[in-house]
Image (cartoon, helix red, strand yellow):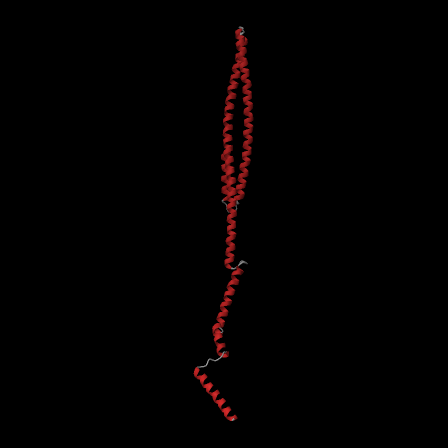
Length: 234
């Protein structure tokens, strides 16, 4: 099973766990990321080991190719000198080297294809992990924002219901308005409205207005008293 498939299984298992009521999605995602990174590290080690082995195979193939070239050259020289037995021996060795080189070439090609695929899987897995990290950061920010909104809503609810300390301001305002209304009602009941009170006080203690006829009658009385007083003196 490839690395990418393993990682997908890991993340799928963690998502399934996150759906359970007792699970912690944030924690499970962190665990999934940690597991994925661990598998990626192991995969890097496998790629490094396989790449190292392939380099050794390439070096061995190059060495055998050099031996093959040497055997073919010596066989040609032996044949030129009519040393058929030596030429035959050298050609037999050359043939054996060719078989070994072909096997090494096949192994090197297979290893190189595996290394290329493993590197592609590793890259894809790293992208999956980075995406998961980004989503985790985003979800954490969203969760934080949602929690702040919830607390703000609770605060507003407490204020509206009168359970918040700040609601005392509203209570004081309502109390003042009620007190003013009660005072106005009381004044009205006992006749102490400002305009009524002023009228009553003016009636009781103010100067009484008189008519012209009353003024004339008083003037006559005054003149009569003066005339009487003058007659007595004479």
